[in-house]
Structures are given as C-alpha cells and as structure tokens.
Amino acid sequence: MSPIARYQAKKKGAKQATNLLGKGIATGPVVNVFLPLFDGSRSVQQVAGAFADMLRRGTVLDRDGKRISGEKNIQAETRKVIDEIVPMLLQNCFFMAGVGSQRAA
Image (tube, rainbow, N blue to C red):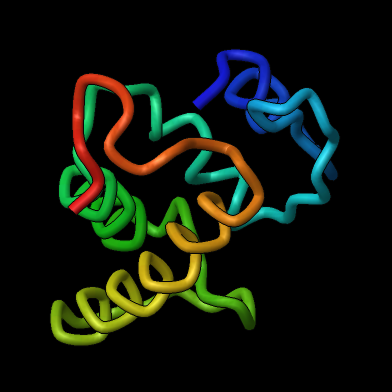
C-alpha cells in the first residue's frame, strides 16, 4: 500500500486515493477505514481484528449508519466487509498479493 494512499484516506471526507500505478481511484468511508490499516505491518487477519475492534467501540458503523452489537454480528460483518474490501483493493492496484512484509492470506 502506498503511503500516499494511506495519507489521502485519513483526510476527512476523502473521496479518492492514489493507487500503486499513480491513478486516483474513488473511495468511500469503508475503504478509507482500511487503507491506513494496510501499512505492511499487519496481516489481513490482523486488519480484520482491528476492524472488529472499531465495530465493538462504535467508531465504525454499518452501512446504514447503525452501531453493530453482539460478537456474532460483529464477526459476521467483519468477514463480509473483508471479503469485499480485499479483492477490491487488489483489483484497483492498491496493493499486490504476496508483496511486502506480510502476505495476504
């Protein structure tokens, strides 16, 4: 993940981030939560754990803007979002599978 994309995603109201090819790609609030987490220091499982913690604290809400409660619901939402976000980040060249200090699994 490019440091530029991580920086751009952290900006309030960010609507795009620059991928590894230097192209601006439209992003939304959920993608912007994930871009800074993929800094090369975490595995996909660790990023998922960080996202689940955000759901538990209520710092990230579901797509309807509601807080998710119950561990079973948090885990289900985390799996669903990770299953959507990781392929999207790969397809849009935000990172490449197997490159960096942690391998996507």
